[in-house]
Image (tube, rainbow, N blue to C red):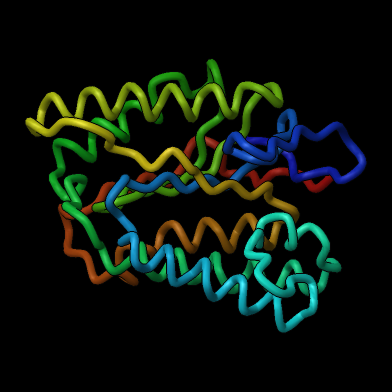
Length: 226
């Protein structure tokens, strides 16, 4: 088993300014890390305006206030979930359009990421399914401590960026230092995310050799619900 499901009654680390945001010892987490150029700046600015409009209509922003991040915290659970669901889907749909240089379409560069994700499997973390797309990757994993998830994401990004830039002849930022994370709540959600990872290349209309997909075959038993 790769881990357990999120337990709302157990200890939880929440970081406001450092991502991944939420972490819990032993809990399965879905993580997305994208390249620095994967979403155009004008799209990010449009989403910010749309978030402000959304929250203004709900009455949690007014006047010249554009601090949508703080306003989201004031939403009730129903509205917050709807807000996050909408803009998370916007992000995923945009990523699947394969904007940017899409260097990870090169199998040798995608393998750098895949090898890094597997290097310390069973040692520093438990790695489940993952897919390396042309401009991002998704994974399911669990970590032994609340702090280790953030440290490991930082390690993956630093190591792979250095190696990819060296091999491709590029310089500068490679990853957007803003991973998306979601603690898995149930068996149904876990299976949904496994299907999402598997189906992502087809959704983005990628051909064989333009992505790297790994399905975890070493743990056939589904994790137990908390």
